[in-house]
Structure formats: structure tokens, C-alpha cells
Image 1 (cartoon, rainbow over the protein chains, first blue to last red):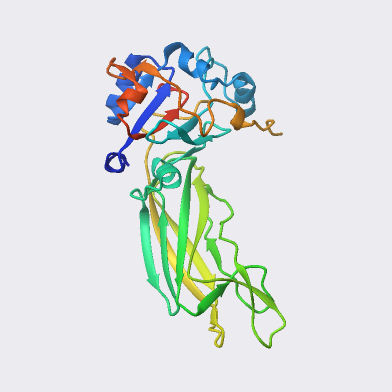
Image 2: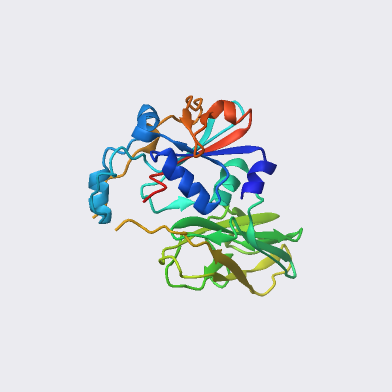
Length: 266
Length: 53
């Protein structure tokens, strides 16, 4: 990720209320080269309006024991801004556990795609399928995304939904893994399509279509490297020909990054 | 049971606004003026709970 930051001319800063000594030790342990800024006393976070006023309530909800350190905490989140310093993206999460991957954040907010992982390409008859993850690695509770891209041969379409009976819509199923949580896949809206002589209205994708499937692993650290097994189903037709439904199986590896010396609060 | 949802648009500066000036020491104890240090580059600023716990 950090070569990607440099290559794309993006500066990175991380701000917490830790002392310089704590940040220094942390940077050394984890080999961190970017700026960890020390907002001891949380004055900047307070000035920016980022202090979570409901920490005790939240911690009670998440079952986190109280501690004198649990005051003046910010909401966990990220700002992205452009060359002029204008904020272009603001991302905050309800839970401290959930966070974006660096690569995923860069892909989504800055269009930087250097951090991809698990890239796979399959040539079908009428479809060229590519799949990738926005990060080659995961940590517990990081939000990752599997992108599935179909380049459909000119003159052909694949079906979206709603769809008449006996046709196969484009779909992706991922084999369950313990601790794997999958969000709904997002496809672009298919457009209505009618065939002369048929009463039904179809909804189809043409050209290049990309679906994005959010997921995260919630198993405790040490769950190890994983392989996502995805099954892509589709049916390709042209105005005159309909091919039988097709299935493409993908195996996409993702490596675990251990949280060295870290644990969730208990 | 769920927590009441928060409206994060009301928390902190918003998209379209200039990110405020921030001057803080880094892990080496050097004072960093965030906007000066990014030297005209785009930037990502992460707020997190702590590096210690």
C-alpha cells in the first residue's frame, strides 16, 4: 500500500491521543514510516468535533470494560482530501472494529487500484471474466470487496433481474467459511430488453459489467490465509441465439495480516 | 438491541469544506503542520482510538 501512496502522490497521516513515546514504540514495532500524529489531550479532535460523547454507552453495548483511558476518544474514521485541501470523502464507522482496508479506501476514494489482490481472469465463450480483491490481505473486521467484471462479447447480453422463469440471471455465490460475512453484491441496473415474438420483458447487461461484493472476516486473529470460492452463473444470448447457462468457478486467495501485539479490548 | 444510529454528516468537517489546519508532533517528536507537510499532495487522514490498546 505504501509504494502505492507514494506512486500516486498521496500523503497519509494518522491521528490519535497517544503520547509521542507510545507512537514512537508503535511505529518501531510495526515498521511504520508515515506520520503518526500525537493529539495528546485530544484538543485537535475536540476542535474538529470528532469526540465521541457516547463512549461509555457504546462500550457497555460492545461489552468493553471501562477504563480511565476511554475518555476523549474520537469517532474512528477517515477524511480524504484533494490537492487544495478540500475534503472529498469522509468515512466513519459505528464500530471501532470495522474498518476499510487501505487499498480498498484508496480504490474507492482516489481511484487508485495498485493494491489489488487475487487477480483472476477466465475466458468464456461470450464472456471474459476478471475478478480481484481490493486488497491482497485481510485483518479481522476489515471491509474488503470482491469485484467481478464481465466483458460481454459484442451483440450478446447476459440477464439481470427481474427475469422470466427458465432463464438464468447473472449471480455470484461464495462458499461459506466460518467467520466470513458477505454483503449483498451490487450490480449496475440492467436495462429492459424485449425480443420480437416473445411476450416477456427481460433485463440485461451488455458491454462490461462490474459487480462489487463486500465481505469481512470476523474470526479472531490467527484464522489464517483464506481462499474465497466463488461461483459465477450467467446466461448469454444475442438477438437470435441463446446459449445454455454457464458456470465459472473462481478460487481467490486472501492472506491474513496478523495484528502484531494487538488484541480487541475485553 | 441496537444503538441509535448516528448521523455522521453532523460529526466533524464535511465533504466540500477545507480540512482544518492541524499542527501536531509526530512519532519522532517533530512538529508537523499537516497541510504544509502534504506539500500540495492529496491526503488521507485517519482518526483512530489508540496505538496502545
